[in-house]
Every structure is written in C-alpha cells, then in structure tokens.
Amino acid sequence: MKLTLPELGEDIEEATVLRLLVSEGDEVENDQGILEVETDKASLEVPASSAGVIEKFSVAEGDTVKVGQELAELREKEGGGEESDESEDSAEKANEEKEAKSAERDEEEDEDQEEDSGQGDAGDQDAEEEKPASKKESSEPESSEQEKGKSSTSENEETKSPSLPVFASPSVRAFAREIGVDLVHVEGSGPGGRISKTDVTRAARELRSQERGKAGAGSAWPPGPLPDFSRWGETERVSLSGIRKATADSMSRAWANVPHVTLFEKAEVTALEEARERYRDSVESVSGAKLTVTAMLLKIVATVIGRHPRIAASFDSKHGEVVRKSYVHLGVAVDTEKGLLVPVLRDADQLGLAELAKELGKLAEQAREGTLKREDMQGGVFTVTNLGGLGTGFFTPIVNEPEGAILGVGRAETEPIYDVESGSFQPRQRLPLSLSFDHRLIDGADGARFLHALVEAIEDPIRLALEVPGTGGN
Image (cartoon, rainbow, N blue to C red; front, side, top):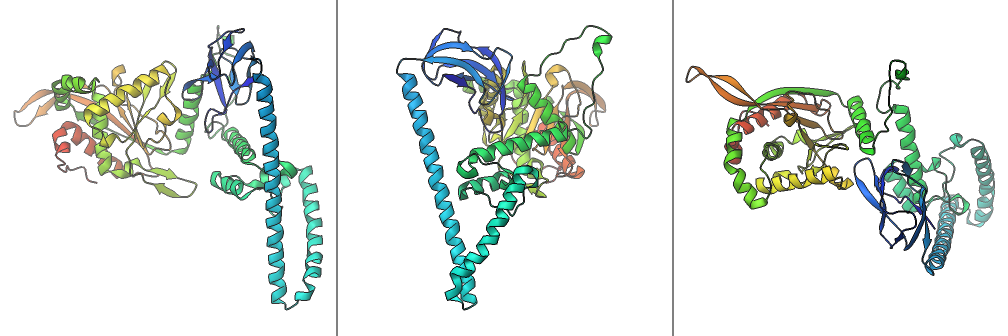
C-alpha cells in the first residue's frame, strides 16, 4: 500500500519533509504520525492511513513533495489490505454510478427544457401539429454544429468557444462561479467528459500557477539571471524553507500591488512604562502572563482602530470596492528560527489587558514551536511588528496584504525634552512609530489622524480608558 501526501488545506500544493518520525521496518498503528512536513506557514505530522509495517520511505528529510505524491510503502496487517481494496473498489463503483445517474438526470433536464422551449415557440406560431417536425429540423443542424465544435476543440484546447455545451451539475457550476473558474476551459474526468468539483479545483490551481509565473513573483520586471558568484570565491546554495518562500512571495506581491505611504512619529512612553511596572506583578498573578509593552500597545491600537475603522479596511481592486470590517483581529509579527510568522489575535478590542497578554504569549510560543495552524494566521485587519528589542528605530514596514495598514514599533530611548513650565530640559522616554498604509484606501490626512490619535492614547492611556476624545479626529 502506498502512503501519499494528503490534502493539507486550501491553496496548499506542496510541503517540505522536516523529519521522519519512524524508521523502515517499524510497525505503525492507524493514524500514527510517520513523518513531519512544513507548509508555507506551519508544521504538521502526516499519519498512516492504515496499520502495518513501513517497508520503505520514498522521500528523505529536506525533500519537497506535492499533494498526492508517494511518501512511503506500507505492508498492511493481514486482512486489512483486502478490506481496504474492496472498500476502495466499491467506493469507486459507487462514485461512477452516482456520476452516471447524475449525468442522466442532467440530460433529461436538458431534454425537458428543450421540449418546453419548442412548445412555447410553436404555441406562439399557432402550429401545434407541426411541433415534432420543427423540433427535429432545428435539432439536426444544431447537433452537427456541436460536433464540429468538439472536433476543433480537441485539436486546440485554447480555441474553446463559450457557446459549446459544458457537462456539469448545477452544484459544480455554482462552485465554479464562486471561485471564478470558467467551465469552458475545464477538462472533465467523469463519464462523457463530465466535470466534477475536483476538476474545477485542479483547473483553479493551474490557473493560479500560470498567473504566478506571468507575474514573476510580483515583480514588474521578470528576474534576470544571476552571475556566477563562484568566480570570486566559495559559495553555497541553500533551498528556501516553505515559510521563507511564502514570505518572499507575499512581500513581493504586496510591494508590487500596494502603493505604500509611511508616516513617522514619536510617542512619549514615560507614563506607559510606569504603568507597566506598576501593574506587571498583578497581571502575571491573574493570568500567568508577562505584561509587555507590545501587549499594552496592542490593546491601545485595537481601541483606536475602533474609532478609526477606515484604517482596518481592505481594497478590492477586482470589483473596485472597499471592504470594511466590524471586527478587530490584530496580526502580530513573530520572529522565529524558521522565518517570520504573523499569528492573529482575535477580537483584541474586546479582551482585557491581562487576557490579551496571556493570548499573546500563547500565540508567540506556538509560532516559535511551529504548532500554529493555518487559520491561526488568517483574518487579520491590521498588523503590529515590533523591532525595538533588536535596537531598531524608525523603519518602513510592508503592508501585510490584503490588510490596509501596518504599524512598526522601534526601540524607546531617553531623550531631553524641553519643558515650558519649568524652563528646562527633562528626560523622557520616546518610542519611534512607523505607520505604513495602502494609499488606495487611506489618504495621508486619514493616516496622520490615526497615528496622532494613537500617539495621544499612548502618552495618556487614562484618557483612552475614560473615552475622553482627543484632537486626533475620526
């Protein structure tokens, strides 16, 4: 029995083998993990589909495998193989019979529709007695035209005409419309060329692959050949991990598609840092989580977004629309050994500070351990990336498309600030903030209002808690 790489999720076509969890000759149980793979965002175990003995592995650590590709050969326990084969055969026969019956039903529906149409035409012409003859005469040339169309289509797939018949059930047609696939260009694998949902999904993947190739990974110019670097010294080539590939693709696409604008401002965090020190122990005793500046900033950002919802919208270039959201899910960039991951903190505006700090710590730990699920990194409306721990000041973060904006946080430093009342310079901690946003969605003035409101809230958190309006505007 051959064990293959199963479907790992929507739009996931391949994975990298991280490690083998068992050895050749080992006995495994049904659903026991046999190897660990890494997709573009997470790591997961691939289980055995039956109990037996691993005869041999067809892949090695570091290999890239596609969905459906053979991973290993399994010798099933006695009795298991025959039952499995029989069940597979019966399932195949059942599917074939089901598709055949469905095809017959669709053909009957088409015939009924044609009869209804013929009757309507004849009724209008008051020629009921001549109905069969007129129908026969009109159907013969139509049939010959269809045969000609099929013949030309077999010679050249690209010359398919939208007027040719497509054999697919109503549910398949609805599915194709939903994901934007034209059935005229889909090759059916069922009886008589009937198109299934699997055929539509395969066609959608091929289309996306072609679009990626044409786009040149989001670049306006296709990448040119690199020089032979070994001419100047020793070199080494290292394959990109799934996470690094995904990051490269998404950043290239975002930089090519999104007209970025970045605004910079500093916020005085003296009061914020004092509050963190004051409540650090109590938060840790309640939730078991550390109260970090990032956690406090996320809570402030979530609250300010509630007053400036335009900053959390998305731009739909295909339909020329703006998508506004009534929820505040915040993405948090996490630096891991495997690359950059962005888990999403759900409903950040509704979480208490202690609860938010706990959830943030949990997501960061899962990101570093590689146990995040794909859905844990979807649905964000705004991302916060903090490079302050690495000593960075201002920088220009790239918008995490399809989000509309991202906030970059730098390292707070003590600076001398002139105090008018005392007439002297006073030491103050100031935090660099860099706001990048999609200029198709957000005008410079709107971005400035949001950033200024954010600075006000950071400098005076009690104002935000009391819902006292500032001067940032809405």
